[in-house]
Amino acid sequence: MTNGASGVLLVVETRDGAIRDTSRELFGIGRTLASETGGSLAAVVLGSGLDAAASEAAALGADRVLVADAPELAAFTVDAYAKAVDAAIDATGPALVLLAGTTGGRDLAPFLATRRDAAYLVDCIRIGRQDGAWVGTRPVYQGKVLTEVRAAGDGLTFATIHAGAFEAPELEPGRTAETTPLELSFAPGEIRVTVKDLVQAEAGPSNLEQAEVVVVGGRGLGEAANFKLAEDLAAVLGGAVGATRAVTDLGWRPHYEQVGQTGKTIAPKLYIGLGVSGAVQHTVGIRGSETIVAINRDPDAPIFKMADFGIVGDVQEIAPKLTEKLRAVRGG
Amino acid sequence: MKIVVLVKQVPDPNAVRFDPRAGDIQSGTPQVANEYDLHAMEAAIQIKEQQGDVEIVAVSLGQARETLNRCLAMGADRAIVVEDAALASGDSAVTAKALAAVLRAEGFDLILVGQETSDGGTGSVGPALAALLDVPVVSNVVALEKQDGRLTVQREIEDGRQVIDLAPPAILCALSGLNEPRYPSLKGIMAARRKPTEAKSAADLGLADDAAQSRVSWGQLFVEEETAEGIILKDVDADSAVDQLVAFLQERKLV
Image (cartoon, rainbow over all chains, first blue to last red; front, side, top):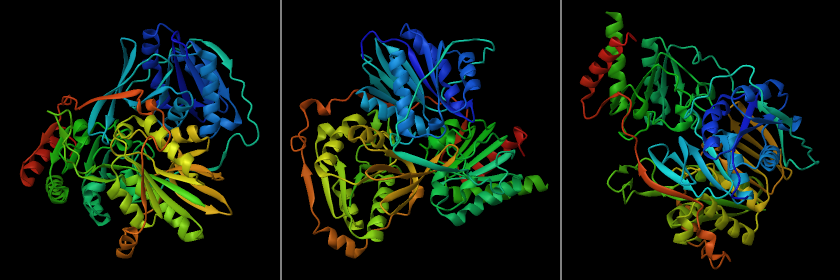
């Protein structure tokens, strides 16, 4: 890459022809960073059936929209998506490629950065330019602490953006951008994996997404049987029970109760986390909650940073007392 | 068939505490095997148990003797460790380049690795290796079956689970939903003592002098000032904490 590269290229993922929320969140920060390079904001929109998504990218502030619309891009594969983004990089020559920190973005960015021998800043909650270098802030040690990561900025750089770190800009209806299709043809065998099916998460009997109160149990509950603590508390509050990915992975609870990036997104009036540490995977799914209460033994658990009310202590001792007290209050 | 499992030894995530004076985690934090890597290891052993003619090689970069011993006791046939401090402290691109050198020398049909580590947690090594070694990668793997020389894997994504068919050679990045890693048996621990662990240096791998040069640097660790006006009770007895919480919920008209 030349030192003269400028501008930002956004990698925009879609679902059912609409831009994903996590990709919408790239546009505001992308615009800011593009001006810092003295360049423009381009977006490559990926998927299948993208007329609406392409207009939306313009309405969100892209100066130039490249549309990678192909049946091969209907389902995510590294091979197909990398080919499309690669072509978009060649067409736009950006200083920075921004991707959402989705499962796909977190695959694509290191894959492409490695192929192009470029620097890659992972999972940034903040990102900016300082004296020509790209400086990001990212959570490490499972979100317990932050660090500043820095890349020289003397060539093409990649960055993924932490879900929820930036707000999507307001749509400007009627705003247009130079929109061009990205011509792609895939040779047989070029996409080395075949996506045969997408199994939707089982909806299950849970009403998690509608419930006004959600009690989520995490691995800090200690064992599957202790989920009774979450069930009892949810029952007295008339709420639903949810689980973290660690818990569903362990098989303590069904997948349809999982809340987080690869589970359900919830926005209850009251969220109570029992033994939930607050890993990023989980917190992106609860940030719409109006009031967040956390009970956890670990004072450094990241959940306490977003909690309105937290108790550092033994959840197995505190949860039954809380249920009992609430039962008395509500009964009386 | 040869399966290479990439493992890392990390500070025990349950014991990690921030030391504000050092701008780092507390020194002397006990080290453990990165959890996702143990699921990758277990997946390799299950393939071997199913089809027999499999060699499993556990590979690590940095201090990892205990973790590699654990892998050998679980069922790996041998281990390779690259104990090069400069490489081990590099960014994930450096890690990937060093591991790629091992993998090229070693050869492989399948590479299994944890989705991410609990320390740096970039989740980048699998996809970066795919680029360096020119093999397909599937991340976030929660199910894996090998049949008639092909692999069927399930990949957990935002919309559900992709069911994917592919042929080795390939790289798969494991999540903990994939399996339940076994504890080493006494017999396994005894057997591990006779299994070889080979140490390699950067020179052995033919890595250039600049191979340890990171493109991305890390600063000191820090925590954000508590911005939320959240009430956090510490060292308060359970009854009093519950009373305060209930009062808080009543004030917000949530109960």
